[in-house]
Image (cartoon, rainbow, N blue to C red; front, top):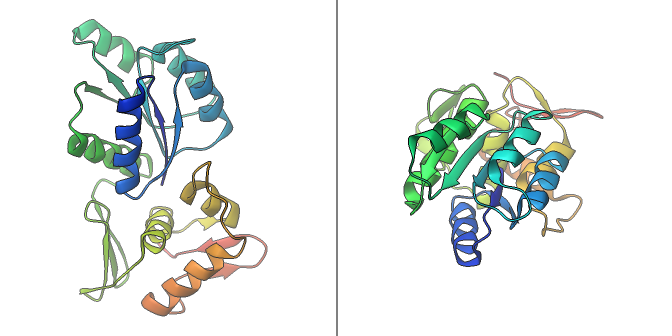
Length: 217
């Protein structure tokens, strides 16, 4: 999944970005409100971690303007402890709220929950036929047996099973599995799809010529 992290304090920004990458996400970053709003509108992120106190435009204003255009899940991040601040964030359209100092394990769990809810999944376990994907543990099984996956293969698998029953274009896959600094080879998605078919069966992922890929619900 692709996540935008918005934080103006450089050390904390680096820590949050690293934590999200270790969770397997493709991560973009922004250090002020204007940059955050531009990226949030320009790209379709699976979740945004948004600090409140930002230069150029605060997090509340970023969220207010973003909500005029998109429903991207947003987790507000702040050192403000007053209830009214949390209420303002939630009323502005935030989907969740977490206080500094941040517990990275809790942050990762909240981001996973936001992404899961945005796709309509109540559980961290997604089952498609004999395939089960555990989005908390980032593992998959086939017929109850664990399947070894690379980080990219798991990311592609999770993205597709969370959109099971829908057509996923190659462009969607590139944009959600790679961050702004990646320069992936043009056939990389095809390679990962080929590998997943070898591991889960040729019929697990269907190719729809000219449209993309699909996994049956």
